[in-house]
Length: 337
Image (cartoon, one colour):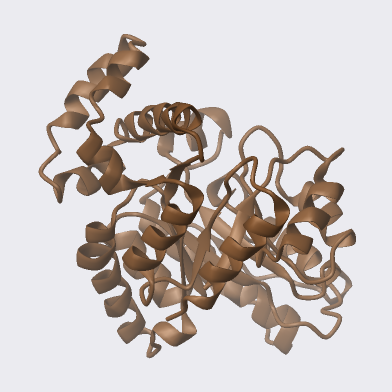
């Protein structure tokens, strides 16, 4: 199992942080597209490391077009000598339309075309095929030689798709190299909803799980002291409550019989009553969606829940001595499907 760590997008510190993560034995580092672009700090990380994989977790697809995204992905992959993984996500309609002023169509259908168009662009650049992609939402039919990038002998960047619902999950298995599960999930949802949808999509694309990288980094509340553990639990309760307001994530609550909780969370969220939202997250919900305990207990629980199901995860606990962290990372890495 590959083990990654999230890192912030501060371009003043990313070089030293990336070096440290590589020295600790992490497989990859992830940067989310939040309040900064993730590609520029990943380029700095690439220039200061040798082996660690570089991942957008995730880049917002619909804020760009397939050609601009393909160019960013190609350039970073070539610069890092094949170490880049393009993690894509759709975001949600209000952000795409009102924050980015970009069109929103039917999310799964639009994402299918977005990735298909990128594949067509890469086939043009890497295999010399004529660029001719015409979909309902995206059309790419012009690529003069002047504008073709030098592939520098590397394969096209790998594309992983962030997904939660069965429709987008099946789509990821049909057209992407892997899938990132949202951290708002559970072992039961993984095994009863996600994996069946992936297997269906892989069947349609004539592939199996060995050729598809399922990435799930669960929420973690971990510390050695009880005081620090309770503080971490408080943060995770609030995070679960926040995600629980999102309609797209309701199926995770539904499968455990907690679907009605979302209406309460949404109502409290509109009133900015955040502490009361957190108070609704019971110990049962907490332990089901997140993983709680000492660092060693967390690693054991991750292996128990997900070994044999996922190929990539995330693990980060603050304050651990480097040798202890290396041992825990290695223990996770040795558990593989």
